[in-house]
Length: 259
Ligand SMILES: Nc1ncnc2c1ncn2[C@@H]1O[C@H](COP(=O)(O)OP(=O)(O)OP(=O)(O)O)[C@@H](O)[C@H]1O
Ligand SMILES: [Mg+2]
Image 1 (cartoon, rainbow, N blue to C red):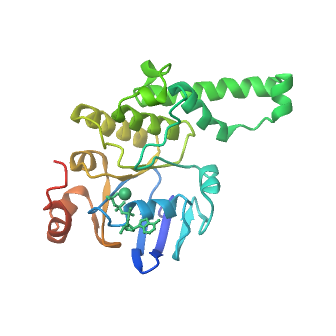
Image 2: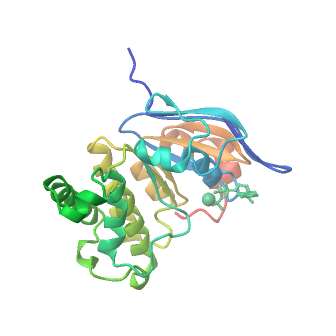
């Protein structure tokens, strides 16, 4: 029997008034698989992410996550089920330190209530230790441990992207959705991002990656899905996709794509 997909979207669509932003897209991500989502500006990649993550209900289609029908479920529900995402526009708490930003994310796993906190029960203390360990691990993986005492707004843009990834990792997700994580990163940082994604896959985490930097897509992805004007126009290994004439015509031939 084949392994069931971790994420499965069937015929998913989104219409904004007269604009069909996403049309009838089928998309699956297997456990431990890294899938790239590429396409020109305005192709519908972020809109598709928003629907998958529960930030926006689809106009049509169905969505399953971990075998559960999650069509129309909230972002909170999807996060509880083990989906974490980063945003195209950075969304760290600018006034908090790097450490506090990541600790805030670990509270999704908190089980003890305020009474436990007041009496500092054993369960509460154990949980605080676990949360702190998870935050430490996430910061180390994202390469930001040395920045833990710095305030979010003081980080250069590329490191704010890393902080977003650390915040997402701190929730110990089964599926990580990354929306243009390499934006604002220099080539060395982008190379490290590829290594990080490979490491996460080796640990069994699945990743869905929207990215314009083709070097990152080629280095990190097992499979790539191409959107254009809201529709899926190609799907395959990174090598198959970059040699697809339609993909070259609508996207890769354009000068906006980073080498
Ligand atoms: N909330 C919204 N209301 C109306 N139109 C929207 C909304 N969000 C996105 N759109 C439109 O839907 C289309 C797809 O946008 P989307 O942001 O999903 O593209 P994208 O592939 O992520 O592009 P980029 O590579 O520039 O990030 C665009 O025409 C955009 O203007
Ligand atoms: Mg986008």
